[in-house]
Structures are given as C-alpha cells and as structure tokens.
Length: 344
Ligand code: 5GP
Image (cartoon, rainbow, N blue to C red; front, side, top):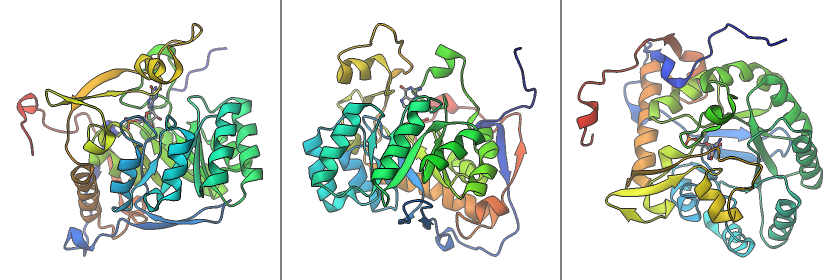
C-alpha cells in the first residue's frame, strides 16, 4: 500500500537562525577550521569542512589550488584523464583533494592505474542513487583494498543508508537526492528528500555510528551553508555557489559562463558520446553570471558563516549545532528591488 508520512520536511529556505547572547565581540575570533579524525582510515583532516563538488566548472585542479589556501576541500571531477590526475596528485596542489569515481569496472581500473603512480589519500565514490546493492559491494571492495584511504560515498538520504554505507567502510556519507541547483531528478522521477530535514533525520544515526555526514547540494547562499552546519552536517558540498569563476574554466560570453549538471544532456554529450536510449537527462544547462576569482567567492562564503557564528555565540563550527536555535518561517527575507540588485 502507498504510504505517506505527513510530517513536514524542510529545506534551507524554510528556517532562520535566532541570535543568542554571546561574549564574542568580533568575527575575527571565530575559528572555522576543524580537525576531523576519520573512523575507518584513521586519517586526520584540518579543514572548514566545505567541499567543492566534483562537477565540471567546480571540481577543477585550479579550484583545488585556490581553495586549499582557505582550508576548503575539493572533490576533483571525474572527467580528467588518468595522466592528468597522476600529475595533479603528485603535486602539492592536491592537498585536501578527493579523487572521484563511479562504481563501474572502468572506474576501478582507472583508479588502480592512478594510485599506482600518485599518492591518493581520499576518494569520493558517488552515484546518483546510493540504494543499489552494487554500491555497497563496491565500497566494501575499495575499503578492503585501501585501509588507510579516506572514503566518502554517496548519495543517500536516510539513516538506514548512512549505517549501511558506514558498515561497508565509508568514513563520510554524502547526503542529498535532488537538491542541487542543476538537478532535475525530483522533476523527472518524483524522488527526493528536502535537504535540511535530510541532515536532521540522518545526524543521530551518523553519531551512533561515528561516521561523518556531508550535506551535498541545495545551498545557494552562505546562510544556507551555515544552516547545514547548524543542523549537524560535518561537511557541506557546494556546486553552483562555486561555479562561474576563473578557476572553473569555461568561456565568458557577455558576462556569463555555461554551467551544467553532471547528468545533463550537455555533460552526457561531452563525456559519454550522448544520452543512452534507456536514460533521460536529470540535469540542466544554464548560463550563470561570471564571478571572477574563486578567492573572492570563497571569502564571501566564509565571511557569512563567521558572522553566523558571531550571531549565535559559537567560537567554532563544532559549537554551532549546540548554540543555534532555528525557527520555521513563512518568508526568509525582503524581496523588494531584488531583481534590480547590481552588487553588494
Ligand atoms: P548545488 O551546490 O549546485 O546545489 O549542488 C551540487 C550537487 O548537485 C552535486 O554535488 C551533485 O550531487 C548534484 N548534481 C550535480 N549535477 C547533477 C545532475 O546533473 N543531476 C543531479 N540529479 N544532481 C546533480
């Protein structure tokens, strides 16, 4: 029988955080850098927990070099050649970078080849639908053969899948089905889970396991990243917020840059010789405003989160979930003159 849960599930745009009395008198006293000790690999990462998404135009080598200066990690996109990946992972620029792969035999063979020639400390194994048996079997195989490599996997949206991924060997579980700005999965399939509730509903089980969670997709403003952290996300993956920069590559035409989902028709044509007959596109293609350097973009995001910490009296991001209180709202902000905005 068709079951419906009537509990309302929320997105980042459904809540606001309430300020709290605090002794912090300057944003400069807020420390966004945390140290994470991975449950399976035992590796330690010192980072803000923000991860650039493994998308064309975001998870590039150039982005990784610019972002690591700010303690921001990068999941390198899957479309580089093995040779280019070897060069990159041999270089200092690869600090805080994940090698990304899917779960096909071709992905496995490419990974084996790259890791033979370059040190890979962290991998991101991701598929659109993390509910297939083959996904967990693949994680277990990679874990078994790479005991000290940090493994991030996704994407799932429920606590049962968080546990299953942890038990298969994941250090970080990536949450999100359908929240992405370039994603049309919810429209094409009717499947999805509002992203804020997804974090809230998974955080307890993640804590019980001792696995980390990464909220992936759905942040379009620095405040959304802050809300994801307040809800208990350890990591937050960003695609569209980091797109449109010099480091993303792509031609600037009339002040705009092309940006597309990784399962859009554009991506399928570019990397897989077109859409296979049995599939439909689950991504869109857009022209987004050119934003200049990645440095400026990430500073703006980190500045926003630092301010959230000041408003909520949190000296560190780890304190934020304990200090933050949220309210459900009808409108988040005043939209007057929004369409006439020329900058900030
Ligand atoms: P954003 O930060 O842009 O809202 O979301 C980024 C995330 O969207 C990515 O990390 C990835 O999980 C997801 N994503 C990227 N491209 C596509 C796509 O073509 N289809 C779907 N369903 N999700 C995508």
